[in-house]
Amino acid sequence: MSLFKRLSATLVSRIDQVVGEIENHDAVIQATLDGLCKKVAVAKQRLAQARREEDRVRQQILEQNEQVERWRLRAVESAHDDEAKALECVRRSRLGLQKIERLEQSLSQSLLTTEKLARDIDASEQRLGEIKQKLILMRARNSAGSARNATHDTDIDTVRLLDETFDRWEISLTQSELVCNTPDAVGSIDSIEREFLNRETQEALRNELAALLTEEGKQ
Image 1 (spheres, one colour):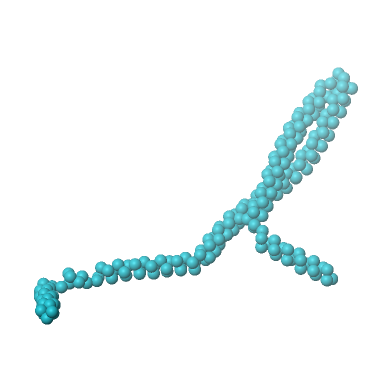
Image 2: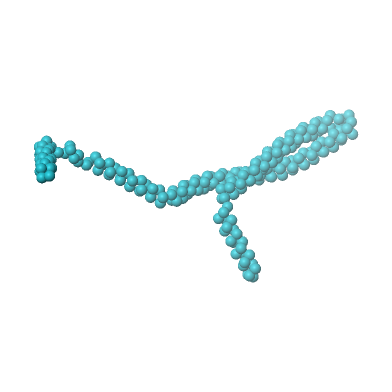
């Protein structure tokens, strides 16, 4: 392989890779699916038209058979009185048979075509059903993957936020518990201890007053 061909192959490969990375697979498949559905719809329309034409040909064959039979009867009726007319009737019946033959050939060819077209449509519809089902599954997988990615991206931040919130809540509850459990300076003293405290306070006040009086007397 020449250098140019190798470079070209590498470039094409790289382009395919980039395109594969950036393309919207769902949109590509949906667009292709829509195109296939339109083609199948067109094929169904053509099949319906062909079958209507086949019915028309069958009706023509039926009418020609009646005409042939009528000309034959006329030939028989005219044979004794007018041989020339009888021969003309025979000739026209032959023309009718020839036309019937051409119509039957046309109908036979049309039947082969429509049968093949019908099989192709059935196969296409089955394939379309498989593609639609696969597209539904792929969309479900894609949605699940997107949800997992979104969850994964926010896992660390979410866990950190929850931890911080729990920490702040625990600190708040601890502070509240400490306030509620702090002994009351007054309420925790019984009556006897309060009596002694009052007496000691009064004694200290008297001592301080005596000291003040002694100091005033010295002056």
